[in-house]
Image 1 (cartoon, rainbow, N blue to C red):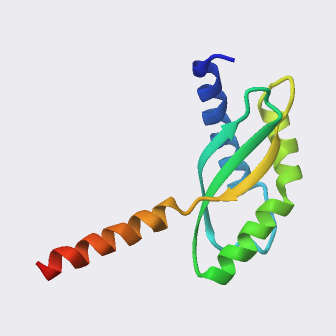
Image 2: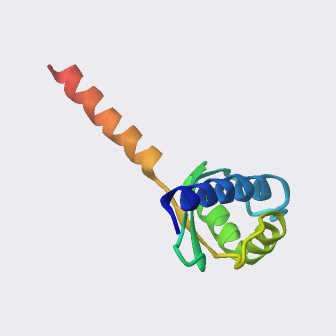
Image 3: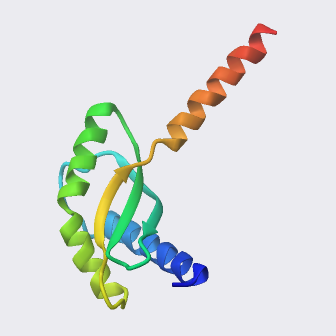
Length: 116
């Protein structure tokens, strides 16, 4: 699969999964703000790693991540209806903490700057 096609599929999957989580998933455990940051689909289109960033306290993050993982089958079915692919990839949801990590590094740099 060409690099261009895989990046188009990744971006289209990211958009659709974000819309599905925002509008269609009705799980009451989803209390944190959810943002789909990245989707990586394997070359054979069998798996899609979905990276989500969650905003909220730790307890709501854990509950929301668990709810998203349990609704992965529903998300996969909805993606299959909206995006025409030969095989609909299996959804694997992972927590993306790069924003928090970046904020931590920014805080460390700010402290170093204040010490000088």
